[in-house]
Length: 140
Image 1 (cartoon, helix red, strand yellow):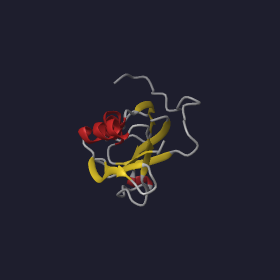
Image 2 (cartoon, one colour):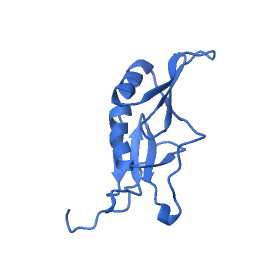
Image 3 (tube, helix red, strand yellow):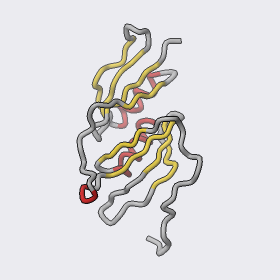
């Protein structure tokens, strides 16, 4: 590790989308690597991990939007809680390659994708960090 102080300020204008999910996970840097494999995520910015391997901020671009990640810091009032009461939804043009890549990377199937009553093709996956991801291919 170098003696230089890392840039702790993210570059301007890297946020994509009007609403950005910020996930608190156990292993944010590992999650970023997983999301690169499963969903084609690109890391736009990351604060280097501390001496315990935790990072307070990772900024990803996934499918044209931003998703942010951070590790839990219980000593600062941010304990790790299991993901609940939300679903990350990816709107895709062709669900099959997105689905296959995510399953091959290690996501488990919650709801197999199929055509739904509203006409879209939709299914749900759970990633190894407990987050539910819905893939939705809108009806043309």
